[in-house]
Length: 113
Image 1: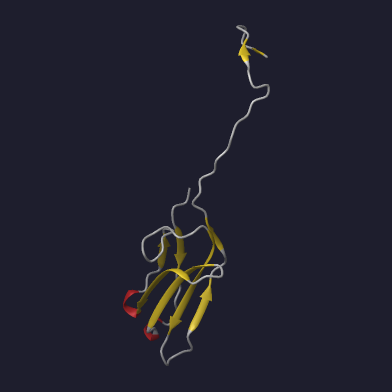
Image 2 (image 1 turned 180 degrees about the vertical axis):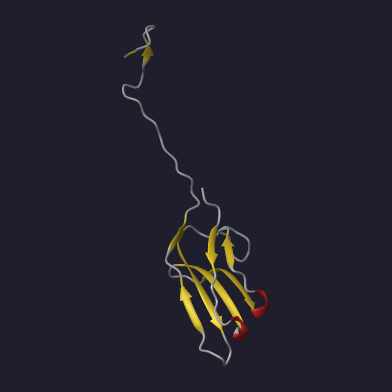
């Protein structure tokens, strides 16, 4: 079971960078988690543990991550978006049913009904 979603960041022209921001949003909704910084703290990767900005688990569903890069007056702002991914917190469950409902060992390694 994967417990985090890892994102690699590749930001060019770091010397011109003014600010960056990542928003992790459920499809059709605003951001659940926002991470940001400036040229002094650009990570090469980030991990998301499925929690929102308040530290509570985000709702299950389809998400995307958007990276916003601001270069000030040096270049136009850039926005890139990840492919959709799913946050699934509900563990699998199942039921086993045997038919016939009662099986009895026959004493010889077999089972009788």
